Image 1 (spheres, rainbow, N blue to C red):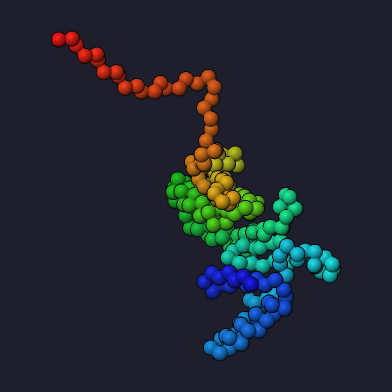
Image 2: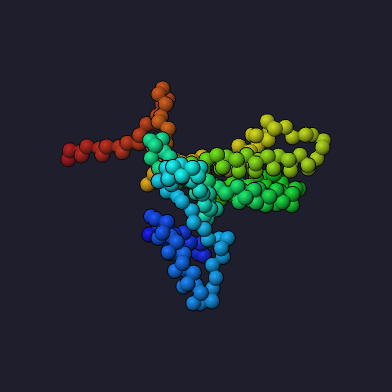
Length: 228
């Protein structure tokens, strides 16, 4: 049995369904001793794992079920070599709620200078990428960054009507201000979101051929001793 806990969120993994049902029964009895009750809508059994797809296919029950934990939707998936893996994607309602917060804040900062708003959006997008920047979650990260730029574009067009802001100019502004999407391969096989100025040692570009390199500084040799 495996138990993962963060604050008041707990996930228990069992190999057999009978073990999971027994765990829920004992947990209900344990909580009842302290006058507590387990919410039935927040505690459910899910068939999940490397054999869930084959078992449900034989039973004619469709695809394996998913579950949400810490802002991610956990899905049964496969790697390129066909082996089982857990796909983590941003929960849609979390993404939509964050975009609504960004929209409301942009309306409040309607007449704030553009560099100040761009620096704030850079921190927002950077924080989002650092938390949700996990393998196989690239489409959701790209969607968030695109919609943040779109919301900023619509907000800037409301500031005045003398000169309409074109999308080409807005695209250059987005590439310069908000944090661009860049997944960098980190240690232990994990992916992490970093700023464009941070590169690993393997990602550093090699010196181009034909460019003159500055000469290395050499220490002048000591003068020979004089004959007396």
